[in-house]
Every structure is written in C-alpha cells, then in structure tokens.
Image (cartoon, rainbow, N blue to C red):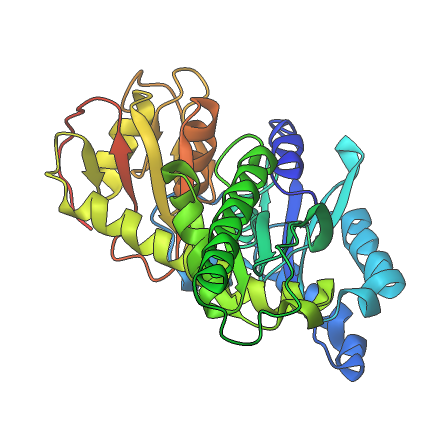
Length: 385
C-alpha cells in the first residue's frame, strides 16, 4: 500500500444510498490456513456492522443478522483471496468493494489489526489510518568513522539515498610511540571524524524532505553517539532510536529487520505521550474528553488533533442538512430534521476532522472513548471518558 495516498483516494468515495463493504481480514502465515480464508471472510461479512443507529448493542446487531453485503462484492473478495491469498501471509488485508460504484481495492497492511466488516455509504478507514500510522516511512543512517549510508524505508521497500566515504590520514609508523607527532595525528583523526559526522548529519537534513520522518541510527556505540552529537536540534527531534551492529555486515533486509521494531516502539511512545498530554490539559479549554465534548468540537470545526481508540464502534446519527452528529435517536438536535443512521460515530468524527484539515491519531489501549486537542475552546453539555 502507498499509505496516506490510498486513504485520500478512498475518502473521495462517498455515495449516499450506496453500500460500500469494508473488510479487514488477517491472512495466516501458515499456507495450510489459506484454505479457510474464504469461510473466515464469509463469516465476517455475515456479521457486518451497518447503519442501524445509535444505542444498538452487539446482541441487537446479532439478532438483526448483520448488514447486507452485495453478492458481487462477496465474490470479488473470494476471487482476490483465491488469486493472492498466499502472497499476503502474515498481513491484515483491507478490502473495499462496491459494485454500484465500480470500486474494488485490496490493500495488504504493514501490521496486524482486528478483523471486522462494515457496510456504509463510504469506505471505513479508521483501521487503515492505524496501519499507516504504525508503519510510517522512516530513514536509517548507518555510520562509522569513515563510512556512512543513508537509507529510506517506504512501504516496506528499502532504498539507499546517499553514501559517504571519508578516509582519514594514514601513517606507517602510527602503531608505535612517536610523541607529539602521533598526538597531532590522533587529534586530526578525531577532528576528521567530527567533520564526517557533521557532513553525514547535513545529508540527513537534505534527505528528510517534507514532514517529520523518524530517524534510526545504526552502527557501533561510539559512531551512534558521534552522529547524534552532530545532528542539529530539528533533526534530533526526529530521532526514534538506535540499534547496535557492525556496519560492514548489514544488508538492506537486515537493516529493515533491526530498524522496524525501533520505529514501532517510537510510534507507540508517541501515542502514549499524546494521550497523556490531552488528559493533562484542563477540559473545556483546549482539550475535549469523551463523546459529548468531542462531538461538539468536531461539529464546530475546532479539532486540531482527534485521538480515537483502535477498536470499538459507537452507533449514531448524522444530519445531511446541517452536518450535526449525535448519539441519540430521532431528530437532528441542530435543525430538527430526520437524521441518517451511521454505524460508527468515531469514524464520522475522523472523516470530519480530516475534512477540516485536522489530524487524527489512533491510540492503542486508549484511556478514553475519544479525545481531542482543540484550536479554540468549545463548550458542550456533559463529558466523560
């Protein structure tokens, strides 16, 4: 998958009255498990969550028998599994299908996610956001005193973007004691090493491009420390962590294997820090915690960053006339017209926040139902986690 480009393409798909199937299916690594994939997908689609309205419990959904999935969309999923299931082992695959809109996408994701199926008027993207967030593009710098490599990792592909070789002075007699001359050569080697790390840091700055890209540094302990000291403040803020290895033995595959968990821990740490930051802020000012407060903030376009859990759904209503979102049944609280049921208010808030140029973070084990950092204060009746 290509990340946020896929998300934006799917966000443009919206057709009231149409039924878009969004299916997240885990494909086992064991080839023997591939045979049961079609049955697993069929079971998920039979239990698909549809726009039944707010307040509906899981037991009520089960009694209702799930949302209707178009036969052609089911068959498209089965055909894709038969053709490519073995290629997707160990991944969650996101399927988006709607025969009426001539839509079919199958996107293998970089991490495992909970399985689920949703039928709505547009693709269900909250899990997709979580996957892209947890598998970001990143850079890796591998350095010693003479050599440096800068690599870019994007969508699982590793590309070397810069190589630097900086050979220091050589002396045939440096192995013995030569007094002041040896001392001067040693100081020169140290100074050249510093220049080498500074030049490598400058390459990292140029390779960063737009946006904040996590940086991983690999190599020996002293080389990692030397390159870290040379990084300017802005680049140091992007430092995600390091791993120790012999730079001369590292293949691109091994670099990705060692750097991937470092980036994963960095992403999880950022999720926790954002959640703690919002919880530490005084509610009613520039923080909103709980469904009522966040619904009010989203409706007013006040959300700078929305924080949503990575699982669970909250059924509700959306007004097509004024855009208001609500958890209660019946008429729209804003304009009094009939509101349209939606399967998940969290998804609706995600979409509205992105429409308003806000940011969204999906949080594992979130200590709240939903929370937000605000651009300006918004008041709402009631609050709670």
